[in-house]
Length: 244
Ligand SMILES: [Fe+2]
Ligand SMILES: [Fe+2]
Image (cartoon, rainbow, N blue to C red; front, side, top):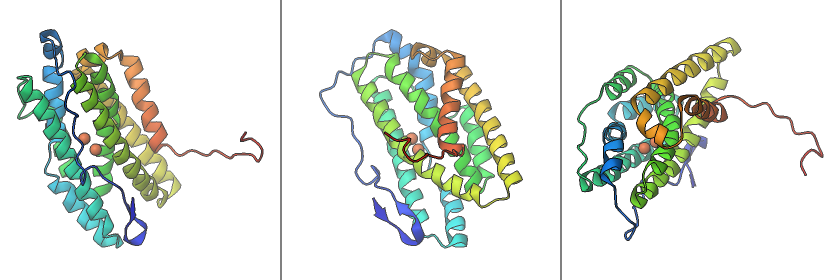
């Protein structure tokens, strides 16, 4: 990690050291496994694929207004990492003759909302997709016996956790600068949006999620606990002597 200007830390990023799936792993995907994941992984790959122009524009505006130029570099690296995720998934799909998608209604809705947003709202939408995405990745990882897909999913989760850590800190800092009632409203609105999005993801990817061990209640519970962990304020006072 390196310290950027004005307190924004530029995280070490695999965008500068692209993650690759090691050779020599079993790359067998049975026909039934292929049928199970094909449409779902294609939608997921589509979501990773973005030039990030809207996000970069929003980051430029925000960084300029608040005098935190290092933020633009961080966002550039995030975008590059997402593009690398899309490339890894595309290579896997091509090798297994899984058709790529050019469009999907869920992807269109996400992109439309993001286009209308400033950086803060954009980050809320992005972090929602990533928090739900890591639960999906863990399901996809166990939905087949393909080692290459398992390693690929674990790599994606590891990158997304770094993104989520940074984005959640930034969002909490932005939220903390607001009046208490506004903070409560933002929290409620985001939780409602998040729960609705998780519901849609369950409906549209339920075959893979079920195979990965997530029935609807468990999926929603795990997604919401991820959300609470990263985005709900924690007021824990450690009494002296309470830590062994
Ligand atoms: Fe990603
Ligand atoms: Fe990400």
